Amino acid sequence: MNIRISVRTKLFLSHILIVLFIAGTAGTYFYLSAVENLMDGLKERLQASAGLISQTLDAEALRHIRTEEDMASPEYVATLDQLRTLKRMNPDIAFIYVMRLEAEKIFFVIDSDETNAQALPGKKYAHVLPSLQRGFTSMIVDDEIVTDEWGSFLSGYAPIKNAKGQFLVGIDMRADQVREKYSALRISGAVAVSAAVVLAFVLARILANRFMIPIRVSISRCSSIAEGRYDEQLDIQTNDELDRLIEAINKMSSSLSLSQRTTQAAVDSLRQAKDELEIRVRQRTSDLSEVNNKLSQEVAERLVAQKALQEAATIDPLTRLFNRRVVQERLDLEVARSSRQNTPFTLVIVDLDHFKMINDTHGHDAGDSILVETGVRMKGIIRGQDTLARWGGEEFMILLPDTDSAGGLEVAEKVRARIADTTYYFAGKEIRVTASFGVAQYKGDLEGAITAADQALYQAKNLGRNRVELAGAEL
Image 1 (cartoon, helix red, strand yellow):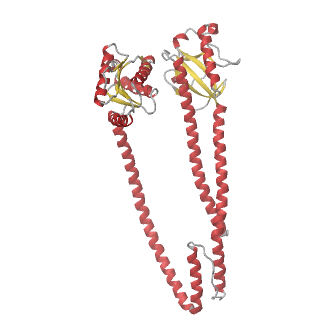
Image 2: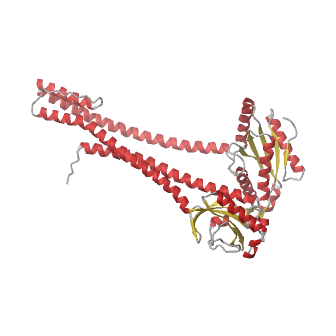
Image 3: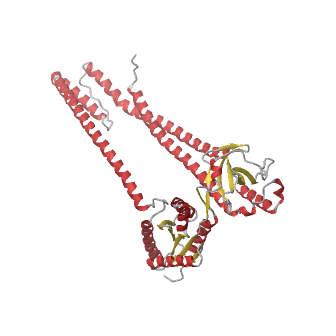
């Protein structure tokens, strides 16, 4: 059965489908991107909050809190008050708590819950979560919402100071608050899609009518010609390709009034030319399509190779930090900017203490793991405009723009404490790592600044390691 569909309907449907396809594709892309960005933002927020809170707690002060009888201790009361205060400051956070890992089992130490459902010291946490277990050694966030007896949450964890892999602080964000944020995104997407549908409908009707008026006039004129009325002329102008159709009809009418035979011959000639042109166009289109496919493939391959070469030239393959070449280029740029704007910048050279002993004792895989983890810890402290690079071996360099020597000392001391105060773990073993720091402010001589920072580093080594030394010479 053949279903007749008018040209107007076809035009209308084609236009609306194209607009809906484009709007739907773009809307889906931006919605998925927004969802991903939202989840990444929530995870980053939970991880950062857990990391900050973990640095305010000391495991040594909490080790004796094991049962409900310890709730009267000053350390428990003070820490509970601190956690509840932090929770009240952020309405998105449901609970903040401290947990202890003992014999592969997890127990509550302090819970900020202010209801009767509060987990008391010594209460065992029955749910075994990989992310929770990893939170005793590193900062981490759940990949998805987790449900337990207190509700459904998205949680972040971080080991607290001096925890030695036994204590962590956890932060719970209620799942309904996460879902509310997703709901807001969905409502925005629905409004955008509805607007696109209305716009597509209006545009489709306008475009369909725009095409159909000259087509209907042309059909009417053709019917007149078929009835033998050759003297009538179409008086309509569309200012597009349809003008050629109207002109052809008018010429056809004039020609038919002179000689029907000549007109028929012209029509046959045009038909033959059209067929030949379509053949040539199809052939050219096929050839161009093949060439275009080959070019697209070659461009894609070159882009992949270019990206790999660029990364190999700028990124240290082990630590995934910038390499020495990149930091040298940025040093040159910072020298130019300092000369132009009269702004200070400071260099910090970091060297891990007794690194050869670590390699000899625990193996080179452990040494590589420590280099990678050290890079992660340092990146978590420095600013976005700062540059962290692997300077060579177990040495790192930190470039601090717009920073004088006092600011450089402050950053170096934070990094030193982060490395020294938190235990490293490899293959189930604890490894204590320290580092020595040399700090020098640039004052006109880049090579002199690098040399001074290096000398200050060796001064720190000579004075016992695990310390920060400032270069004494004016550069």
